[in-house]
Structure formats: structure tokens, C-alpha cells
Length: 259
Ligand code: CO8
Image 1: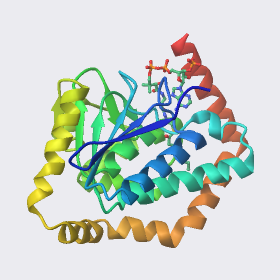
Image 2: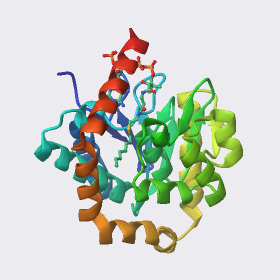
Image 3: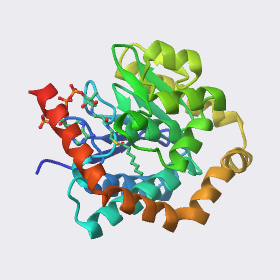
Image 4: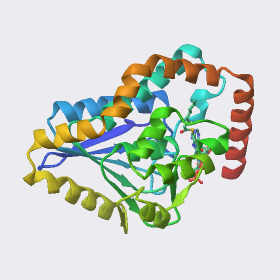
């Protein structure tokens, strides 16, 4: 109903700032994911050297997957929804350009996934949290969510975080390496992301990209080999009456909290 769901602005150094602007919480519905998919293509086509992912909300980076896409879903739409999420992850996690997340607020579940898919994370200080909380919702995070976390923090810490549905405070996230730096505000977070991207001005781009590709090869290969099965598992999951019941309760709890 309002403006574009994603804004892409490229500065004179070839760094694109991609801002999710599906307010209030950037919950990832099909439309937002499609807009992000398009934005990632634009960044590639414009030959940008780097991309910063951030949010137009003052307090939320992204609330993760839009629960409403999964609640009483149209099966055709929810399949496209999941395929688009996979596509966005493949393009972001496997991008040839440099990626950094300016995390200006909460980043639960899918929000954390997006941030972890980047190469560098700067999070705004404050009472915000970040993490994969799926088990708390009775959900088993898909393999590639877990792979993305293990690519970010040590496996031991990832196991603890995933099994306990740990939501990290900014300080905790910094300590465990889930984020790389903190920032005083959004502008500071973006400036620090730009500093990170500019570090690569002295590194030959092809060597940088091939190195990133090799380091990230296993999770991407898992996706390529298991994509259909991953989709089937998700469709079975959302089609399950028990899952629908718990989504319903979760939605009610969210609404009550919001008032
Ligand atoms: N989806 C849909 N709507 C949402 C979501 C969401 N994820 N999050 C919040 N909203 C809605 C709220 O219901 C509320 O709606 P309304 O105004 O109609 O009451 C509105 O957005 C604003 O939310 P809040 O009032 O809660 O806003 P706050 O600023 O107080 O808090 C938070 C923001 C911290 C982001 C909070 O909203 C929150 O914790 N949200 C839930 C986050 C969450 O648990 N996400 C998990 C999604 S599941 C996922 O991403 C991975 C699933 C993998 C599936 C694999 C299957 C095999």
C-alpha cells in the first residue's frame, strides 16, 4: 500500500546501501523477499563493489519470516515464498560483491539469518537482540540456517545457541563473534560497514571472491543438492495441523504484546 519495500542507493565509491522498508518490523513476506531478490540482482548488475544491508525501522532490523505467510497458507504461494527465501540467501551468502549488515535494531530468526549471511556485522548499541530462536517456537531451523550460523560463530557456540534458542544482547553477540563491532547509531553503523568494505581496496577482487566462495562452498553446495527436499520439508511443516495451531498461538501472543 505504501512505497517500495526496498530502497537501493549507490554512493560514488560503488557501495550500495540496501534498506528494507516494510514497516513496522520488516517481517519477510513474499513481496519483501522478491524486492530483495531484485535489489541483489541490481547490485550485481551495477557492478557495485560492496553492499550494506540495513533497515528503515528505528528499532528493528528484521523480525524474520512473516508468520502470516505460514499461517493458513495458500500452498502455491507459500512454496514460492520459500523458494524466494532460498534464492535471496543464495545470492546474499554467495555474492561476489562484499557484504556488510548495519543491524540497527532487533534481528530475530530470519533477521539474524540475513545479517549472518553478510561478511561483516555492525550492530547498534541498545536493548536489542539477535539470534536464531526457532527451537523456542517448536521449529527446527533448516540446515542452511544452521550452516550460516556455524560459518559465523564456533560450532560449539552455535550448538548451544540453536538448542537453547539463545537471543543475544548486543554485548553478548559481540563477545561470541556473532557481530563484529557495535555502533552508537545507524549512521555510525553504516560508516563502519563502509570502512570494512574499503579495506578491500588493496585486495585483488577476484582473489577475494574466489576465497570467499571456497570458504562458503559447503553450505551453498548443500543448498544446491538439497533444495527441492528442503522445500518439501518446509511445505510438510506448514501443512501440519499442530504447526498451524502453534503459529496461531504465537500470533495471538505477538498481538497481545503489541496491544
Ligand atoms: N511476522 C508477522 N508479523 C510480525 C512479526 C513476524 N515475524 N513480528 C512482528 N509482527 C507484527 C506484530 O504482530 C505486530 O502487529 P500488530 O501491530 O498488528 O499488533 C507488529 O508486527 C509490531 O510488532 P511488535 O509490537 O512486537 O514490535 P516491537 O517493536 O515491540 O518488537 C520484535 C519487534 C522484537 C521484532 C518482535 O515483534 C518480535 O519478537 N517478533 C517476532 C520475531 C520472531 O519470532 N520471528 C520468527 C519468525 S520465524 C523465522 O524467521 C524462521 C522460521 C523458519 C521456518 C523453518 C521451518 C522448517
